[in-house]
Amino acid sequence: MDAALGSLVACKKLSLSTNAIEKIANLANLKNLEILSLGRNAIKKIGGLEEVGSTLRELWLSYNQIEKLDGLQPCVKLQVLFMSNNKVKSFEEIEKLATLPCLVNVLFKGNPVYESCASTVHKP
Image 1: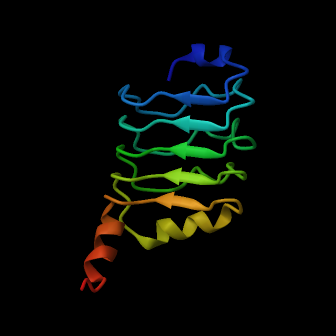
Image 2 (image 1 turned 60 degrees about the vertical axis):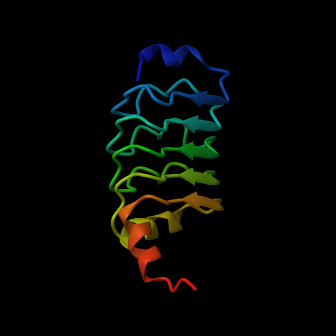
């Protein structure tokens, strides 16, 4: 992510979807950021959220290459996490979300963990 993002000090919603971004970075000056949309990129690891963790309410990371949910701990006000169509495989990763006290809306459809759960549910 480009260092020029640091000039967006008043930005509350930032959408950088479909930009071939590989790493979350350069968010230090976005002290008012509440919604970050990074869907349809090439992100493999969640990180770089320390500077916006106290304000971020929504994080949209669908259609990336993410397997692990480490890196969300700084996001103490996170309410919404969209993670559909990534590579999360285990329920142990989902359990990491228990440390986020405000989280009320999550989406994991299209991940191996969701697909394995969906295949065991009885369908009439």
